[in-house]
Image (tube, rainbow, N blue to C red):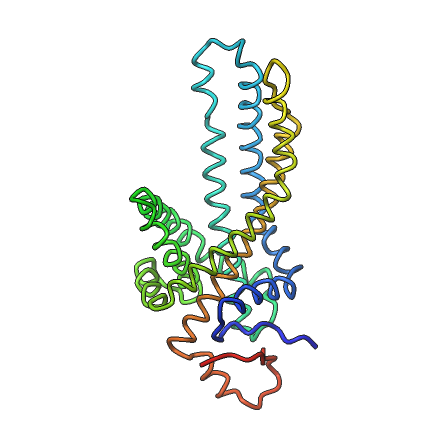
Length: 292
């Protein structure tokens, strides 16, 4: 029988990446089911709003020569555009809470699959805290990138660790932000590098799915005497982009593994727990080598 992933252990760069995909493989069906149950509404609402926006954008581009009314330009980015942004932000916050709640319950239950009701209890409690925190931290991140980019890159791993601290430790934003600084001290580069690599993998996978339809939708702009975008391919590209948002679960799992690894390195809570339960065969443990 394959041992289930044990979160409370120290991992190096490669182990975090490998165990991210191992955890997904072991929990694929219940994790994806949980994602679509709780995040599907945001995905669908954002998709519909963006489809309306893309419909207006394609018509504007295809009829650009015949349009002289500047008022049409002002209507190009209407309420549906801002609704799409709002649903995307709420959807990502819900994805974060859902994934971290799943992991938190999974760890509490001794590496057992959480039920939908258990995850829903966490989501009800943490969603607005995470959503509000993500808006504030997102603004902070934007400010950091505006100032010569370097502050933004420096803040990125610190901000990423805030969310697992909020959900797993039931922390406030202030507590989570301060604890994130303490955990990442002396471990900045491995955390940053792990996030950088996993996001490259995620964006590569998403681009692989979306790129063909995007190219076909743009092809008409560079062929023929009159630029024309394909409405069908543009709409299909938008649908695929939103369906691919399920891939954002991957870096959240990576962040959770990084969080547990940093906590274990600083506090050794998981090691002490395993020592206290030594000889108990009821709880499956990941026995792969680790360093302390």
